[in-house]
Length: 291
Image (cartoon, rainbow, N blue to C red; front, side, top):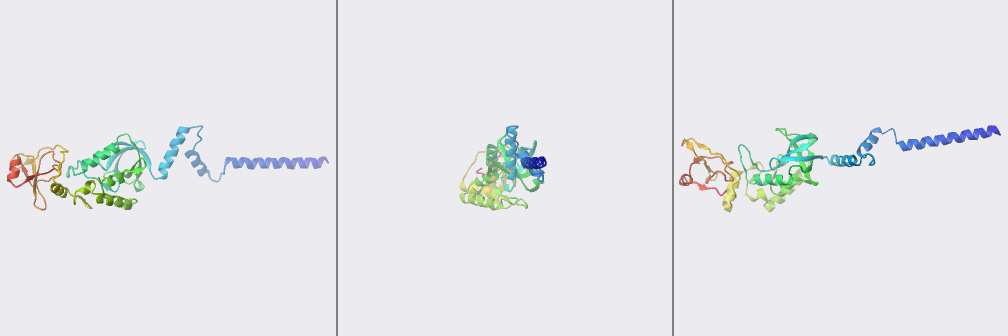
């Protein structure tokens, strides 16, 4: 009788211990997936220990899931180029697959709608603004060392906004960064139909770039005038051996136009002749630029 009781007691004790052991293993989780457990731990730490860090980590996870990185604007350089603070360092970012007219190019000077694009970018991408950047494939850079990418503000891609406003054209499409090419061209087509911005000037925005002479001709036909955008240093007319700063330009159609310092196309104009006075230009058969 006593032996039977001892055997039953021993069997019951072993069963309880075995049940207790399985329960403990289930609570601790599977040891066959340590990386998964570690990932869960880093992504969503307990709120009771560090709620602020938990929220920040969740935001970073969401950015990474979309292929975007959190950053902040340092300053806008021009329409399609900005400086940002990314991972603790300042980077110059050239927006992928879009091109805005120039504002301070050493050869082209200020192009039509260049200032408008730059001012718009500076207004939206102001210093200190929190953004997201989707870098190009493999964090690619251009020949100037600028990081290539797509900029997002409040979930909206800024590259697309420039196209919508007619302040940029689709350009520099090189593999492997062709992810959004289709939608970019679709947005550009709508801007062209609306004749928005750069598309309001016939033959100005082309597949090869911006044709300043075509823009000047288009504006001249409209009789449109704009406020001066930049002051310029006088050039020298070596044939007269004196300082003269009025540029005379002859277009491909033979139209003779002279540009005064401070006018919109002055810096971009390559002069065929320099004049010291407007009277000299008029006598030579040139007329004043509308810009």
